[in-house]
Image 1 (cartoon, one colour):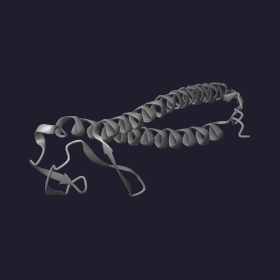
Image 2: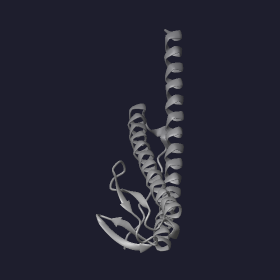
Image 3: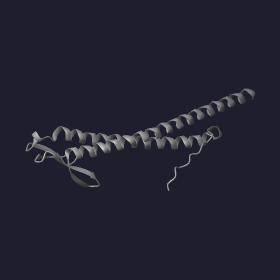
Image 4: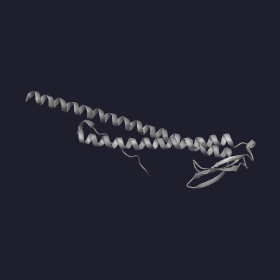
Length: 159
């Protein structure tokens, strides 16, 4: 049985500037990775939405036997004819393709979009929490630097 990772609460005021700097660096790296992941999810969702739009726009009975451009990659298209307007080939992942009806293909892509939306919402919560942690660390670091400068000035005044 998998358990949730336990979170530790650390009193940031007990850490030195060097330790705070390391924690800040780690959080910066995590945020960058999470932000990149969020961007990738958004791009994937857009591709699935584009697939839905393409099915709805081009796969119609009145387009039967019309010339079309068939995408082989994102930038390579070959000429073809639409012989079965209600049958589409769907990439289901890892190089496997399945023939589906337009309605089934639209449902398949919509489910993918919904799944990605759910993951994006969860990821957004994590990013917000990490950002809040980063702000807290930055504030503590700033306060420690101000206190250090004040102590230095006080020592110079006494000397």
